[in-house]
Length: 212
Image 1: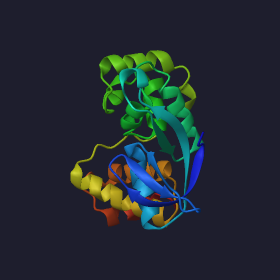
Image 2: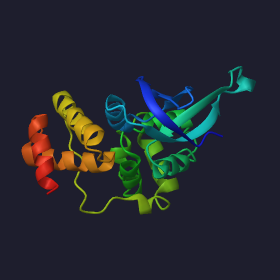
Image 3: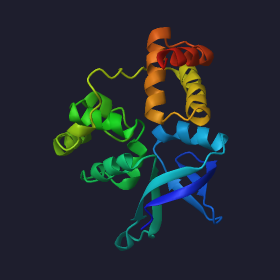
């Protein structure tokens, strides 16, 4: 079993990244879209990356499907632990679980613990019935993942704001070394203070003010 991989990201695809190890081997790991801004920033900065991975075999010989080894990559061991709980829910495969990770795992866990169906149904492939099933099975187990009650609410942004967010994330994570959750929280607070049409320089200025 491949538990973690370290190296340099050499390619980012739609749903996966290619990581080259020190030995020269390149591994493709599927990742949730929540992780892409940080991984893109690390790739741009040519910083080394360590992915905590889940290794599984996809396919079913009895149904005539070839067996294919897959890797799913995570930024932290805690995110991997959440994923292993998530795929315990009947009907959620490793592939569908990865596609559902449009929000960071701690935010998804918070929604589960809070029985927040509206947030869960925003995830790819998760309808109302599936959200209810997830909550029924995991809400008690994931209560410890919930964010503090005073954590800032997520800010809804349009395409232009998303571009400004990505630019700010690339600087905060790739150049300044902040972790993704901290950078996201600071950017959310900056948008809340400045408005959803704020430009990246103003966002960064507000972030620096908040960190003083």
